[in-house]
Structures are given as C-alpha cells and as structure tokens.
Length: 132
Image (cartoon, one colour):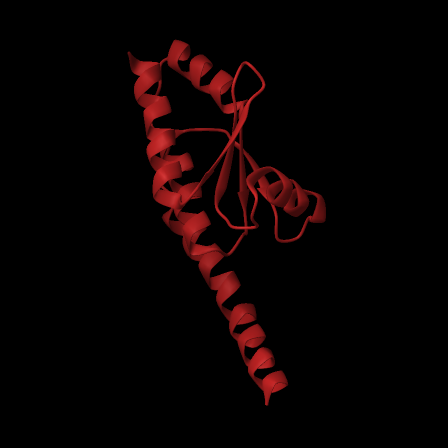
C-alpha cells in the first residue's frame, strides 16, 4: 500500500510540475525600471546573495516572481537536484528548507534567511535602500 501511495504522489508531481513552471513563466511580471546608478547599486548588492530553491516549490516561485518584478539578478541554486547546494544549505543554514536566501556581508559573515515573506521583505528593502 505504501508503494502505491508513493507512486501516486510521484505521478501527481510529474503532472503538476510542468504546469506550475509554465504558469510561472506566463505570469512573471516585467521588471521595474531603475536608474543606472540604482541598477549598479542593486547589482553589487545581489552579488552577495544566493537563493537556494526547488524549481516547482510554490513558495520559491513566489520569491522568483518578486525577484523578477524588482529587477534583481540573484544567483539561484537548485538544492533539489544538486547535492553540493543541498549540503551547503544544510551545513550553513542548519536545515534543508526552501526558499532560503544566503546573505553575505562585507565582513564575510553569512546569514541564512528562510520563509518566502521574509525574503521578499529583504529584497524590497534592498530596492528601497538603493533609491535613497
């Protein structure tokens, strides 16, 4: 019985994953316009960031759409299909949970930010800070 349940959920994932990814592609908003100076500040800030994610995770999709809307170019690391990223997430952040934003500061300290809403607030604060 356990095998049948696993196979059923694998089948559901196989069907839903392409649908979710297509919906993300079709509904991703256009990026915000930034001045050249703001874009340079944001690009420098984004070099300190990495998003650990799974492709079909709805919360990861939510964060990726906000990144696109804000016009942020943040490195995405697929912790589902790359064992080294999964291990970095586990050893650095303490748990394999996505989405997770890795934030490195100028002093070399690393912060791991979990939860999609917290990540989105952090990204929005980057854009707000670049405008002031």
